[in-house]
Each structure stands twice: as structure tokens, then as C-alpha cells.
Image 1 (cartoon, one colour):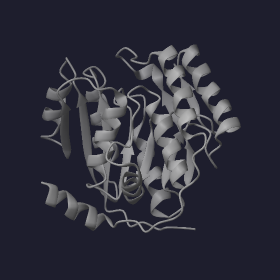
Image 2 (image 1 turned 30 degrees about the vertical axis):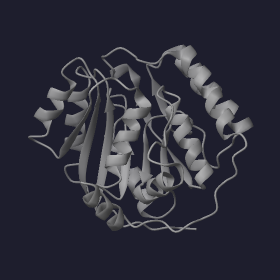
Image 3 (image 1 turned 120 degrees about the vertical axis):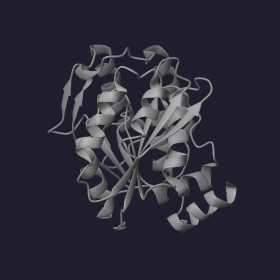
Image 4 (image 1 turned 90 degrees about the vertical axis):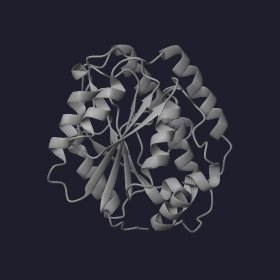
Length: 271
């Protein structure tokens, strides 16, 4: 069933840990790409206890573009960064887009992702590496093997309709769907701190009955300047833990969603 969504504002969440080398270029690209977008946007930089100039770069950028900086005093991991960003972003816009802060994701795809949600065809839109027109450049061999392995394993064990890329960090979410997820899972709706958090989040949306659509995109890992933070063996172990968690969970029945205006009212009350 289609659920057309009027989109006037979009939150763009960037979980960031020691991204001083790549964040400035990404922020410049977002500012230039969305200058003529048919919606307002706010970038939410979640500085996850960085020890470099990530926070200072975000503060400087806030003078020239709509940007909100949220800081964790210590490094808590990608899962906490994504959770913090989604929790804040869902109050700022009808759609929340999450991107890697290392400049490997091109913001040119944001408007396409928003359009799919706006037309009512999906609750989550995934920029997928496994669509016919997708291009992957510069990704190390072992990370490619990990991604393909995750795809093959999930298709066998916990298939999600229309989904091939289970681990990418480039996605757009309906804010109302995120609100329903939090209502059913609690404020801590992501428990994984490692890169497996992206699989956990997607499987939680599958459990929720959220509709997913993928679009092709070009992943430019060769543009990344900073070092990778993924620990492959640990990520594989956590993948199996997440699969076990959702193995026997039935999809939830449909329930009424809380409106975005009500979510914002709740936020003002909490403040």
C-alpha cells in the first residue's frame, strides 16, 4: 500500500569518528548538491568522541550551512552514533538520510531517495551496491567478500523483500517509521556498536514490516583519505549474533503511527 509523504524538510545524519580528512569535502558536496533542492535540510553531525578536529570542522561549517553538531564525550561506536543521529533527525524532517562521513557516498542520490519515500513506495530506501547500474570503486577485496557474503547469507536465512545490500550505511528512512520502531523497541533501538549495527537496524525494520526499495549508486571508496575503522573478524562475529537475535521474530502487526507534529511536541516537552 502506498503511503505518500509530504516532504518539506530532510535530516542528513553523519556519524563521524576522526573524520577531519574527509568531512570537509563531504559537507561542501552536500551544500552544493542540495542548494536547489525542493526541500529544506539540516545536517546532523554526530561526533563520536573524535580526537581530531572533526567537531571544529562541523562548527565552522554550521556558519555557512544548516548543521547541528551532537557530541559524544567518548567513542561509543558506530551503532551509538547512528542511533543518536536517527533519534535527533526524526524530529527535524519527514525523511532522515544516513551517510558515511568519509566522503565515499555521493549526496547527489539524496533527492532520488527522498522522492521514493515522498511517492509512498517505501519506508526505507537503500543505496545498494548490488543493483545492475551500481558501480563500486576502490573497495578492498576482503570488504567486498564480506558484503557479498552478507548478501548471500541473508537471502538464505532472513530474506527481506527487494533488499540485496544488507550492510550499506547509505539509506533514507521515513521519520514516522523510525518513530514506530522506537515505540516498539524503546529508545535503545540499536544494540550493536560495531558495523553490524547496519544489519541490525535493517532487520529491525523487517521485523516492523517496513517496506524497502533499493536504488543503484556509485560507491567511491577510492575518494576516502582517512583510515578504515572496520574490524572484519569482529564484524563477522557480530553479524551472526544479530541473525540469531532476529531468527525467530515474527513480523509485527500494523499499528497507527504517531504524527511528526506529535513527535515534535514530545521533543519540546522533554526539553
